[in-house]
Each structure stands twice: as C-alpha cells, then as structure tokens.
Image (cartoon, rainbow over all chains, first blue to last red; front, side):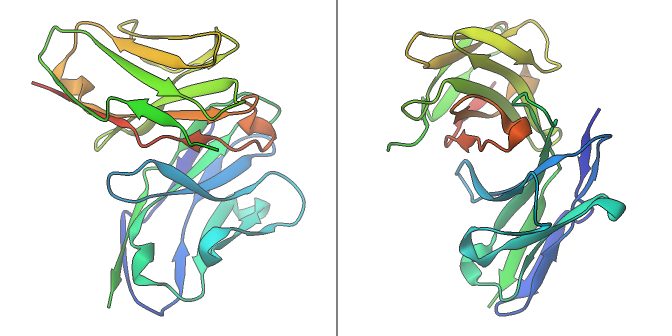
Amino acid sequence: AQSVTQPDIHITVSEGASLELRCNYSYGATPYLFWYVQSPGQGLQLLLKYFSGDTLVQGIKGFEAEFKRSQSSFNLRKPSVHWSDAAEYFCAVARGGGGNKLTFGTGTQLKVEL
Amino acid sequence: KAGVTQTPRYLIKTRGQQVTLSCSPISGHRSVSWYQQTPGQGLQFLFEYFSETQRNKGNFPGRFSGRQFSNSRSEMNVSTLELGDSALYLCASSPTGLAGVGETQYFGPGTRLLVL
C-alpha cells in the first residue's frame, strides 16, 4: 500500500526567506504526486502535481517541487516566502494507472514571521 | 465555473443520531470523492462515486455510506454517530476520477461536524 511521510509537523520561516517542505513516499510503481495547501477554514487547493516528464514541476503562487525517484521524495520549495503563505501543506500520492484515491501525508503547518 | 459546494458548512449532532452531508461537484465532473479530516488521523479517504456507482472505498465502518445522483451530486450519511466522528468532511470532484493518471481533484470547503 502506498504511504506518504511529511517529517516536519511545524516549520517557521521569516518572510522573504526560502522554504523547503519535505515529502517522502512509499509506492512500488510510478507514483502520481500532489501538493495541496489548506488555509484555516478552507478546503484544499492544488499547488502542483507530478505524473510524468520533467522532474521539476512548477505550480501556482511561485511554488515548485522536484521529484527524486532515487530518494522517494517530492519536496516543495519556494524561493521567497510571503506572509500569506502561512497555511498547512499536504503531500499526497495516487496509485498509478487509475483510481481516484489520494493518500495524504500528515501535513506541515507553516508559520511565517514578519 | 462554480467550485465544489458542500452543505451544510457546520453541523452539531448528538451521539446516536444520523447525519447527511451534501456535495455538489463542479459542473461536468462525474467523480465525487469524500475524505474525513481529523487532528489525530489526518486526511483519510472514505469513498468515491462515479456515474452513480461506488468505485472505491476506504477503511471505514459500514455506518458510513454514500450515494450519487444522476446529476453527479453526492450525499454521504453517517448513522449512529460516535464522538470520534467529529471531523471536517471534505468532498472533491474531478472529471473522470483518475488521479492515478494525473487528473486533479478539486476540493470543497468542507462540512465541520461536531458530535456531542
């Protein structure tokens, strides 16, 4: 069965600093990977996804993620964090080849200090 | 296009009662999935409906059920509520329900259920 690990429960960064959120997955075949963001009281918004091709994926709001098969990782990065980026971030994996079940990590709560 | 809508947004029930939550997907989307989000268990997949048929099911007891109508709207029902059912219930829609080939699921704002 697939699984996702987000090792950092909380991360605090200063506004303007760079950000990297870690995500490791466990899946036997080619994974389909997603990053979602959740603001308080809101649903989940897709930031970016990887399913084939270029291993560096660009998303919305200036985020990018790099798929590294050798490390089973799909880390999310942003060069300069804005105060409005404070939210909870979830990495998710879908079983390749079909199906719509997403398996989520436990999330990383991002706090941005002004 | 209007996004995924969920009603009601907030709900308070007592143990033993049952509850029905509603989800209207994005127009044209035929797949609707339901997730439960709790502080302890995180986000967990409940089930998915496509063309009025349950296509996938997570590891939840039979008290959790759902259905989908011909217009793709979906409802989920929880019978005999327990305190542990208190959670944010999220609905997501996608055109054909193929996250496994990179299709995006679009989430609604959720229904927050409190069981007393």
